[in-house]
Image (tube, rainbow, N blue to C red; front, side, top):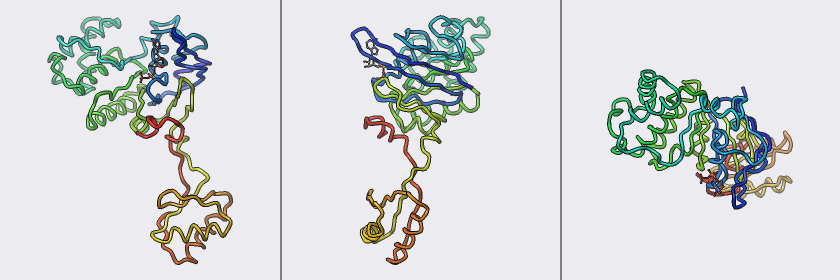
Length: 304
Ligand SMILES: Nc1ncnc2c1ncn2[C@@H]1O[C@H](COP(=O)(O)OP(=O)(O)OP(=O)(O)O)[C@@H](O)[C@H]1O
């Protein structure tokens, strides 16, 4: 089921900054990573989906609704966790999340019950009556997540949910997001400049760079087998490279590995014969898989 669809979506801010350019994408339900370097246009995309800002041109539909004109209907079905710290310090998590439940239209008792439930889901049930000002960064991020869940949305838009967390806190937050996406049947868009972390928990990715779409696809399609064979022997890598070149193969070296184009079925046999002729011990011979990081030209996003 398509939950988000855009057509030539473009956003130019005052001052001439084009944050999104001609973005056409169709997103199915699931846990979706929205990845790109800082400034790629991720927050802008999220804000447009929520109807907080309007596109300059092109269109977007969320659950087949137009956020520009059907803003309330979209927000009733979407929960939003903003990137920045925006929590009041001197109220408890229970009060704050209940208040936001009320703001989204829930009656008083239902809002209180839903707030308790949302805080339980994020692991803050025991601490819910403490003032938010005394919470750790990880707990504050969880309060932001709980308020996004309070009105029982069908889609969560999470803007950099692991910001400011240490590695253990990041892992816990990612596990929680994955659980929400898989066990609660809520679709989740996780926005991050760290490819490595979203890649672990998402079914599909939307990769953007400089406001333009690089690729939107299932992760399994992005990492499918390439037409390159990777060969590794325990010793004799140079001799094997020379022997394969002599057989007319275009060998390149990547550390201890030799990479050989898989241009015919005979390539496997030729490599095995060369290894055996040289009496080497073969560690590895397999088809290399593409890496999602290959999509990006910016090191910041691809490396992490
Ligand atoms: N209100 C605004 N006015 C002018 N330019 C803006 C505004 N908001 C964002 N931009 C610019 O638009 C571009 C995209 O910004 P956006 O915040 O959408 O990117 P991002 O991928 O979410 O990055 P980050 O993770 O750093 O927030 C950037 O060049 C940014 O400086």
